[in-house]
Length: 444
Ligand code: NDP
Image (cartoon, rainbow, N blue to C red; front, side, top):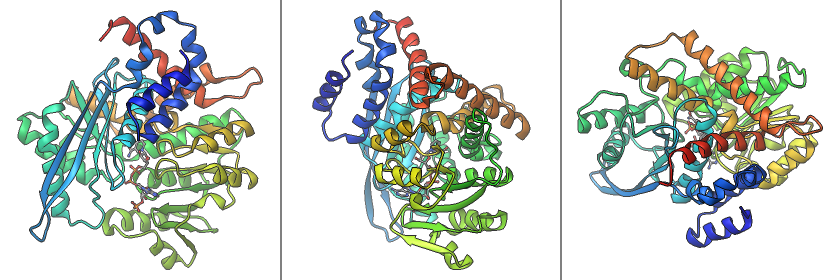
């Protein structure tokens, strides 16, 4: 495989998809050596079959707002690869959603799901609809309209969606309700469902908790204790909230959170009471992070990201490309020694290079945030056997999966000088399993 040629072909065939090109390039650069050890992969053109999604559905979603006006949005589902199990991946509702972003996410998801040790292929979907500022009824009508198109492409053994940015328990509930009505079945085709109708304990917490479990494994390799470490978190949604919750329970000090308007810096640290305020602000009131600064009298910086604040550890948990080269250099200059990604691809390629060159502990999202989809996989298992596991049981399984992912990254990513390149480790480990499954199943 010649990475440059594969990339230029993809760019020619799929122009104007920068996030997709970025994600593919990052993976191909790191798996090139391993791939070239297997001439049989090249013979079967594995690389193109792995980079190009199996299929992409694009559809119009028509719904009626509270004023009685008819609105349209675009809807998508990318079924990327099902070599090791049903397509699995979240649904994102955000005004920025387009085909490029969803193709990058579905591509990443394929390797992430492979790392989880569970039988799940990769997919992703979404819409350029933004729930922000919409009434509950508008969100419900939109979700129902979205699923009226989507339902015929998904199912418990074919494609199982979940949440992502803009899609939490409320949206999953509305989508699953409509799915059940259309498909006349009760097999749990979505994950992230409410506990009363097939959801799993620990699913809301899973991505944030899982990221902290992964961080603990990384710190262990250096004999570092998390207690009293200063952590900068970005975002204030699902992933950020539970990241902070777990960090607090371990005695770390979290000094920043953010939303798409700006960030707060609280030098005293966010404590349990302040975090409860954020849960209420973001999940019930659906307000802005600025209100935290107003309530607790701390600094709020409009239109900026928190990476210039001094911290030991950074846990980006908002969105893609939220740490650029300058941010990375600022983090390093301030003594940051670990970055563990809750969001998908939050660091630009330049930022990733800064982290790797500085040889800090750096975990890419596809390893560090795989806890969410892992517990989604456990939710699928519980739905299949029609049983619910206890909180302790699910949490134990999550911890052991995150340890296992760390071990796989170490196996493929440990360099001669002992430094663990988690980017390479995660990409090669994730890739090898999918590649072997594709080879065994013939040319499809
Ligand atoms: P939420 O919608 O719950 O929260 C997203 C947070 O990020 C909000 O604070 C939001 O601010 C902020 N944000 C969104 N877009 C931008 C932007 N363009 N610039 C700055 N801030 C932004 O989503 P999640 O917490 O579920 O997802 C966060 C990240 O984690 C995403 O990258 C997602 O793909 C990834 N992830 C999520 C998983 C899950 O289980 N939910 C699993 C694995 C990864 P605002 O309130 O202003 O919109």
